[in-house]
Length: 150
View 1 (cartoon, rainbow, N blue to C red):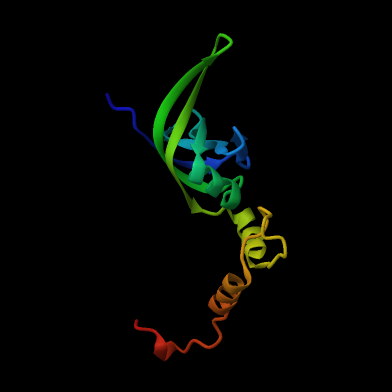
View 2 (cartoon, rainbow, N blue to C red):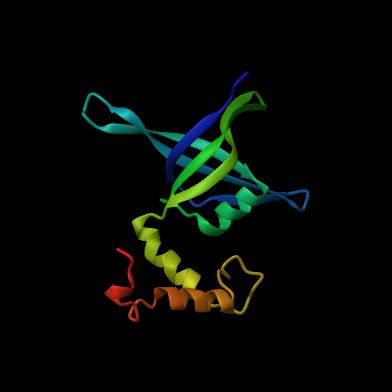
């Protein structure tokens, strides 16, 4: 039997990270996926698909992905029943951020570039060495057109 799902869509909310048994991380999120055809009004509709990721993927999502970001998901359909209600989710084997939304772009770049003294905080994006690399990378003033290979 084959149960594979490949989706690209935008997060409808910030991911929710939870820990089970004190160490197992699970991240819940919903993505909006546009249908590839127009409705009677000539508009593209979207499906809202609930997903969950585990371990490293869950940590990655919580740390680097926000509402509006475009993500690619590879996983499988998982149907569960609780108290007589059936739930359908995509259980993700792989999640990648494909694009930062325009409204998050400036905020993310600024938060990554801000050093912080609390290395245990989720907000601690870069250590001092990484901060220097970002600053050096962002300094484009010393590049000469003759240095470019094209």
